[in-house]
Picture: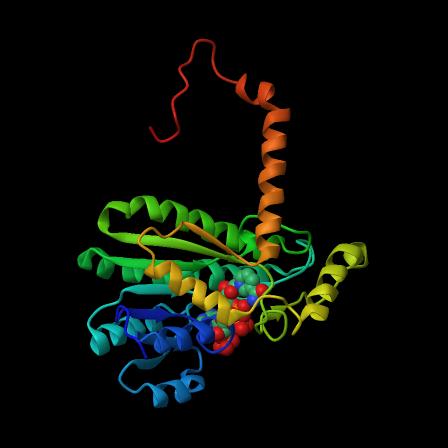
Length: 289
Ligand SMILES: NC(=O)c1ccc[n+]([C@@H]2O[C@H](COP(=O)([O-])OP(=O)(O)OC[C@H]3O[C@@H](n4cnc5c(N)ncnc54)[C@H](OP(=O)(O)O)[C@@H]3O)[C@@H](O)[C@H]2O)c1
């Protein structure tokens, strides 16, 4: 296969879905991969097919010890890390009142603290290299919150904020950050990766029951092709001018456009109230200087 760049990719959640598609695609492109998974034996076939280029490592992103070990394995195997993909995650779906405190914390532990664990551990390496690209899997739900997705979307909004701030913090260090915002893609997300509340409440039947039913009905029929998403992520990494955000899927683009329009309309409708809240004569400076 053509060897475009020989980058070393570090991917979390490589067992199925986006992680698996991306791992296969970057190997086909002639790159090297540290494919991480909670059950690394699920990657045995790829390691067998690409013995020089693929290494499978155990990694639960919520386990700081495994994070350190996995990163050290990458350095031991390939001497560098060029692209880090924070992909591991799942969806805790249900009304805010329906999901238990424990389930909420578990969701943040994986989707937010997991991303932070990996990112904070690789940053010293990328800073020393003066190069690197971090791809964080957010979602269309990182910009738009639908009823019954408040907890999941809160984690993805957090990923958006962390990523956006990080992109500014490391811009002059040769490190790039891209947020990936998929719509509905045909992975295990709506199936085994869907976490439902222990008990649904009658009061939220329409919103939460309806959303869960929609997710289950969509399972296996989602329009998005994870192989095409993987190709798009590779295109971003190979671009000289990668975006901060990449929406994936016409459904994601449509929902984000609607959100932008409604935010603009609301800002315009309430502009007079918004801007007339300063002390008399105060100078208005851009936030952050
Ligand atoms: N598919 C969609 O429609 C969609 C849309 C927007 C965003 N996303 C995001 O895309 C990412 C990947 O999901 P997917 O759609 O590819 O679903 P998936 O096929 O269910 O894959 C989820 C992956 O995350 C891994 N994972 C979960 N918790 C983990 C942990 N604590 N440590 C390590 N790995 C863990 C799973 O590992 P195991 O095999 O061990 O369970 C699996 O490899 C997620 O962040 C998700 O929020 C998906």
